[in-house]
Length: 175
View 1: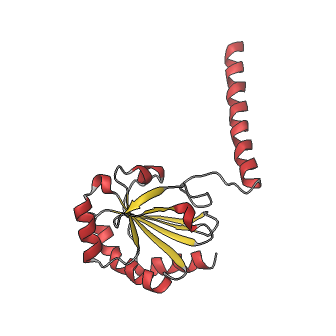
View 2: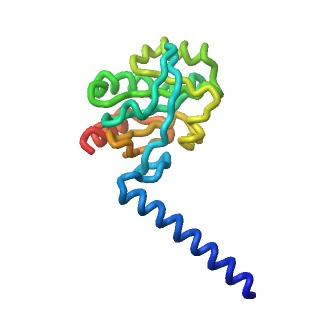
View 3: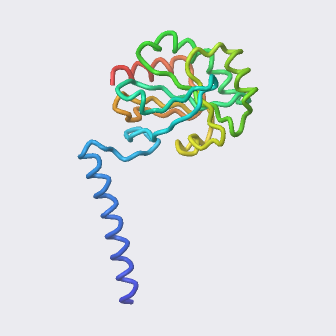
């Protein structure tokens, strides 16, 4: 009986310590990193399909839109023309990044998709879907709207309508 109560106290103390760490980080201006609204977006560095590299940290101070997709995904195909329109409308105010789940797609198919839809914004390769896992992408498309401080403002799992995109981009810009 005594051993059980000691274990319970240890668990309670560990939980309180974890809560305290999260609170201290948020008070210091370092919110915990999680791929959810209200949290710091997890950092990443990936190759572009043009051979360069991009990292999320290089866009600090700018609003960022990230869209995880694959060429074989019907909802990704459906929303891409509207994303290209959104880029034309908001591309001077928001950094657009596409992240192809190259680990479950092919480079050739992804490049064909980029050309077919005339995607003008930067598209990154996630060859082993490591960043998709880091962002807990369980369905595609998955989109994230991140403010200039690196905080996720909204996360949308599944395809978005044009109206939904407009609403989210306006909210991001006015946040």
